[in-house]
Every structure is written in C-alpha cells, then in structure tokens.
Amino acid sequence: MARDFTDISVIVAAYQAAGTITRTLNSIAGQTLRPKEVVVVDDGSTDETTEMLQRAKGRDSRIRIIRTSANGIVSALNTGLAECKGNYIARMDADDRMEKTRLEKQLEMMIQNPELDLIGCRVEGFTDSGIFPESGIQYQSWSNSLISHEQIVCDLFAESPIVHPTFFATRELFNKIGGYSENPWAEDYDVILRAYEKGAKFGKHPETLLRKYHAPGRLSRREAMYKRPAMFEAKAHFLQVFGWLKNRRGVLIVGSGPTGRQAAQSFENRGVKLLGFVDNRPGPPDRYVKGRPAWGFPDLPPQEFLEQFRDVLIVLAIGDSSGQRAFSELLQKNGFVENHDFVRVIYNWPPASRCST
Image (cartoon, rainbow, N blue to C red; front, side):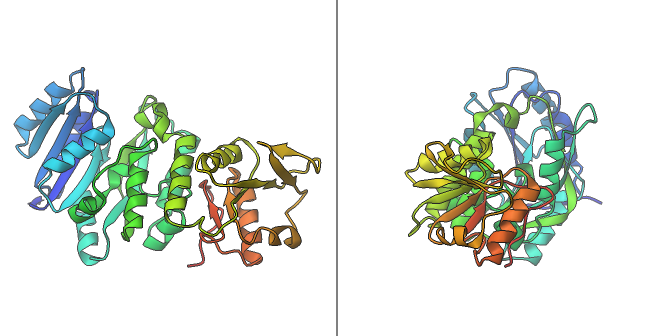
C-alpha cells in the first residue's frame, strides 16, 4: 500500500517531452512512498508537453508546473530547486522511469546512513529499438560498480560516477553548494565535484531503481558540455581547485592518442605545464606531440624513467582498459599513489584499477 511522505520533492526538467513525460510522471505517481510534490519545470517546450503536464496535474494534485522560456537545463533546475519545499530532493529526467520502490528505498538508505549527503542507485538503460549501444553498456556497468563513498571518490575523475536522474540529496547540500552552476561542462558532474569539495559523503543504493531511457537525440549526445573535451575541462579545473597540482612541476600524460591530447589541452588551457606524453607504443626517440616529447616504450617504462616524474601529476588518459590497468599497476608497484601522484581521467570497463583506500 502506498504511503505519503511530506519531506521529498521530486524535480523534473522537461523540454519537448510530450512523448515520454506521461510515463515518467506515472512512474512517480506509482511509488510505494509518494513524495510531497513533483515540481516540473517546462523549459519552453513548443510541442504538446504543456498539455500533457496539465492532464497529469488533473490526475495528481502533487504536480506543480512551472513554465519558463527556453533557458537551458541549469536554469530550469535552479528554478525548480527554488520552488521545492522538501528537505530531500530527488531528481528525475522527463523520459526515464522509476521503479516503484525507488523513493522508499533511497530515503531508507539516507535515514539509516545520516552521514550521506547525496546518493544514487543502479540503473538499467533501455531504447525504443531494444538495441543498446556498447558505449552505454560500458558506462552503465562502470557506474553500477561504484556503490560506496570510497569507490565513488576513487573514480571521481574518471567520469561522472552517479547518474543524474538517480540523485537523491539533502536540501542542505544544495543550499551549501548554491544549487546548479553554469559552466561549459556537465551540470551533474559539476554538482558532484563541488559537493565533494564541501566534504559531502556519497553512496549508491545497490538495487536497480531507475530505468534510463537512451534516445538517439538526447541532450548528452547533442550538447558540447557533455562531450569528452568539456569533461576534461571540468577535471583539469577541479584538480587545480582541490590542490592536486600544488607544488607539482606540471603534468605527464599517459597516452598520446586523441584522448591524451584532449586531456593535455585542458591542462594547458589553465596554464599547467605539460612535460610530455608517454605510452607503450614504440616510436622514434625524437617523437613530439603538441610540441612536447612523446616517449614510447615497447612494453612499459622502466623504473629509472619514472623516477624523474616524482614531482609531477601523472594523468592516465588511455582509452584501452588493459593499457590503463598496466600503467596503473606499474605506477603503484613503484610507489606512486593513486589520486595523489597519478589520476585516471578516463573510465574503463572492466575497471583499470581500484584505489587501495
């Protein structure tokens, strides 16, 4: 039997969501623990989203509709946050589906673990065609493998470790970080990184409580802020903010391919000295990439090579999981500490490594 709970606000940002918003709102209405309110910000939709929302509101008085001009996802979310009355904020996208026990189980987890500030849950993706892209499977598998605060923080710079529509956070946390922020990178990843800076504790419910819809034209496919160069900008920015580059001569990029070069550019954009590149591809000794030395080794760099980089931050930007794992293990074997002396800025599945903490 469904129960009401007066302290949860669900926030949904909707844009051109006429084809999906009804099923999304139905999944919220069907929760075993019903929220205080569902705040839907219609961000200037020109399709039938507005009409669909009005119909849904007629069926469920908890739905509150706020219509704005098309100002973008960050503005919509902040508008919704300002209207939320609950002490717990649950995020939801306008095309996903909650499992019926999601809110009940996430609230229970927060109450049983009062040190937590923001949690997520495992997800399962779906598409209209039933065909799920390999990249989506890999990201989903990686994200679903991160459950504890320690696991999430270990992979904090590999990629955004908590799927945005699974966010379940305290109102206090959003107040502390000032809500969402306009930046040239993904708004959800930005929230996680700023929350971590403020000392937030994370977690993830081990059950699959959200079905994530993957549409061919979804926002994360279209907008530059969700693409890899923008995410590297976020990582370089927060590595500086967190002080990981303090008293370091610069960065050494592991991986000299397109991914490594993109990572290198994000550091150069912030005035960080790029010392060069290294990978396990053999090449001429005088090879240069972006005007910097690019050392290649048939296998892996010897210890004497690594010793000259004790005072730099080594950035692992290898897309290949086996290569990333080999370099991680080599560095750890030689006394380099992950997330202190070196950092992974690409997620891999299967995982390249796990922090020893």
